[in-house]
Length: 326
Image (cartoon, rainbow, N blue to C red; front, side):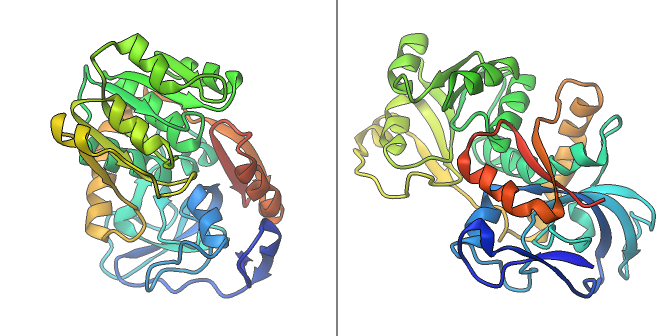
């Protein structure tokens, strides 16, 4: 099979197309013939050498795919050869074939293409587990997502809005802000022109923000604490501006804030299976009735993976960057 190899850590140019054996399918797993795979920020960080794969996981990049099941491991009864699925992988998505725990597979939502379905798993597992499980966002609460035009951001805006929250976002251009608002954000703030803290304090008054999803870090950490409502929850999922900040923790005590965070990949198959079940129950129907829509910025052929990563690093995209392996 074809796959993308990273013989060294570094810039996008370290990635090369190679050929190798198909993965072995263990009990409880399925083998997927990959039609499309998503490109995500953790892929970039792994390529740079800063996000090692968990023990036992494939060293090949790629955390989400869609395609057809080519083989089924012992003990698996839900899926059969020929089924079309999308899946959260533990690695290995940038390849013609990938072995995935069967519980991390989901059916293709009715009306979506394989490419569209491949854009969903990593983003939605992340958003659901952090915004709705960890932070327990509820209808009527105020939600802020930083990086609203990213794959995570576009999914979080749509889902939080569809489930009844008031949604706000930050993004790096007026075009990105308008895209966030078109997806359901009440207001998106261009952080290059305005301080989101000042803007949202003016909009919300003393109300504050109930849940903040932050992938920026740096000086956003203190600003998030200032902006959070009483009993607010701040969830960190990345630190694009760094994980270190000088912070006044007094508001954390006075407002009874919860500051938390997580990474998805190292979590157990049981945890991921539970998230998959909730996505199937709650989120997949919203795609099937067109309440939600996939947002794909650009598709690249597998051999153009270097350009795909360069686009990711440029942050000029809105939505998901995808690889076409057909």
